Image 1: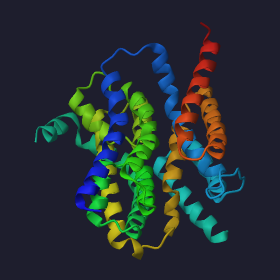
Image 2 (image 1 turned 45 degrees about the horizontal axis):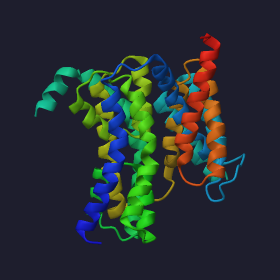
Image 3 (image 1 turned 60 degrees about the vertical axis):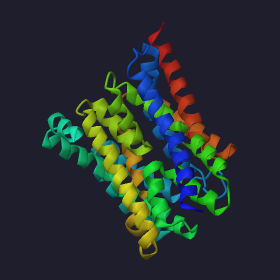
Image 4 (image 1 turned 180 degrees about the vertical axis):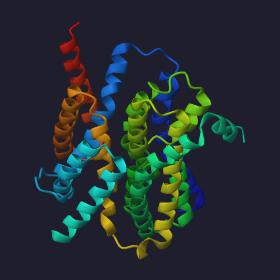
Length: 107
Length: 237
């Protein structure tokens, strides 16, 4: 591929990535949003985070099948408890990494 | 630099520091992923400057991985751009949710801010905005710092990625650990926990039944809607 081809491809990807990031913000930030929309959007972060997280814990990446007992899930349980107890973001990240590393050497 | 001046006025040194502290788990998580993305790009014969250009213009982890895989498979530019669009539609939701906290902010700021909306910066910034000790400049610092680390990590992946041992120190788990804690930060009441459980169940089933990344938007919209209906029922009309 020539530099021009790369530029065309990445500019195209950039535009279709930027528009969904920008348009709702540019539109909604200057409108009075109805109460129901604000309430619904209030539930979006928890729903997005959970949707991002859960398949990595319960779905096998190669076969796309449901599994219980992935290393990611076994480590997630104590990591979740630690997060609930301490509410420390940095601490949770480090505990999660440490346990994942440990679990990897035991597996 | 008008922006730097207004940044100095709007943000005390303490606030800047707390923005840096808030961003470090993202940076820690982006490093191994960025390196891995760079290594794959090199294997797919992409030069380092192409990866740099992509990280700057696109700045979207999963889409960049998919792009490299599709380039390696010989896909057309149109197919890659179309796939990128679908994969990144989930940002519509995040951008909308952020609008609640950036209400009335001038459009030039929003246009710049939007560039840095990712799963990770969204989760960190929403947790802080909700807590109330956060301003938009701090949120922008988190976005742009994450972008800088992503840029450096992906380019470093092309240049020296082969030298770094994979999976060292459990660093592959950094973003998962961060998401677990940010999920906990979102538990403001029973309805939030219920919504999270619904989203998890739908996402897992959706992911198994429908290949690709549509499960993120599908599960998030469904769960937020069900949660909202449950909330309205409890409160009455």
